[in-house]
Length: 188
Image 1 (tube, rainbow, N blue to C red):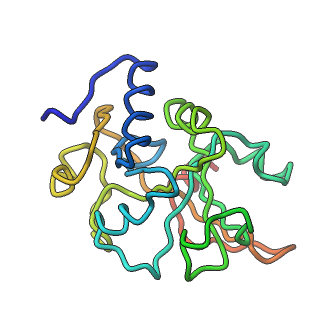
Image 2: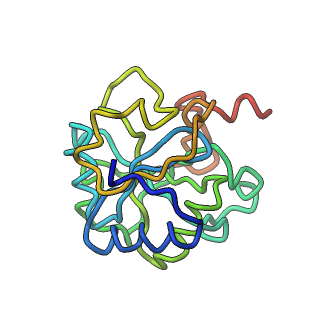
Image 3: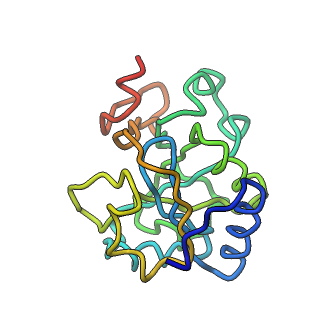
């Protein structure tokens, strides 16, 4: 498959950045599952790719814990946790337009964090590499062959052995709730 790249770290970063500059979508491994990512201005492509309802929000990958305001949260990150916060006014209105909150991940995966750093202030919109509401966890590139024709690039990294991220809602000050158990519960 010509869109699959087996390149050294820095070369793969540059190739992904070129794909993002042209508005493309990349499938890559995370610290949990394989995901699909693009820059936030092109996040509509993820909805179309996954046949996902606009009422189901996408998440964001960011690079550093200093972008998360709470020192307590920095102990969880980077890691397999999605943190839901009240939506920031700096997010484009057309990103998750039906939601007052946003899910943010800082994955424990050097490649993704490096991509996010190279993009400066342009967050990476992200979701799992499967059709919306699918029951499978995409643990290897063969688990999402139905998406291959619509992807601009696939960065394989073998087979992963994880569940999705643990999702924690922190949008109401002073409280939290576990929205979804995930890989993090195995770490504590």
